[in-house]
Length: 267
Image (tube, rainbow, N blue to C red; front, side, top):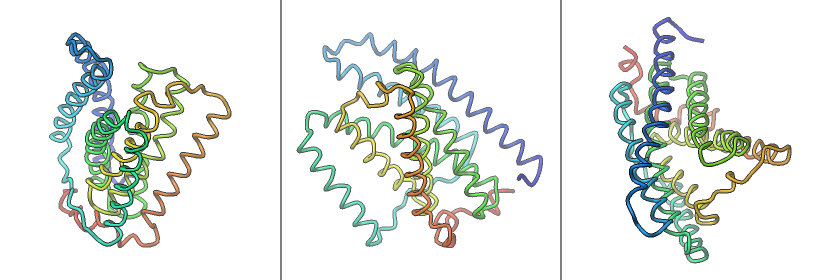
């Protein structure tokens, strides 16, 4: 699987830093949220937004440190083809319609969408996926390995939500977001633009939040056969969508391959 012990060591270092990141984020984030919770706002909704803002700022700080430890180029520029413009236009129209129909959750939807999209895409697709692609050769086999590992990282990252929901709901969420994370990773590899995956991530969380508010459906779910089968189906649907986006039979169309000089980066 790996070409040398050097690559194995890099993977071990990556896993070690990933675990450290989660532990520091868990305890440090809780401490920061406790400090911020002492700031009176007089509004429960704004209390939640303020706490989450502080947490995401702390998360971005940790991400900047990881960016120094794992230096990898991150690409944001979008190629505005007809397909891209149509896709963005459709997302915009749907967002406006949902805003009109469910305006009571608009603020939460915009906040959750921005907060999650920027930090999570930068960390898991920009840094982790980018670094994995950097240390492997850029062929289709290694791209799938990199996507699988970064998807696993993204899934396990959501275990931290166990603070706000039961263990069953947390496990269901970890499975559900796995397929979604894979799709986001495929978007980055295909388009070569992290901004595309950020925009998609934003709209996905925006839609879910504007329909349900900040109390997402996972929080009240139990780990039974019905919910488990539903989430597994969801996982494979997004897995399929990701593969359709990636189009494995046309790997020469993966723009990230053209943007990153893997030969020089691997030295």
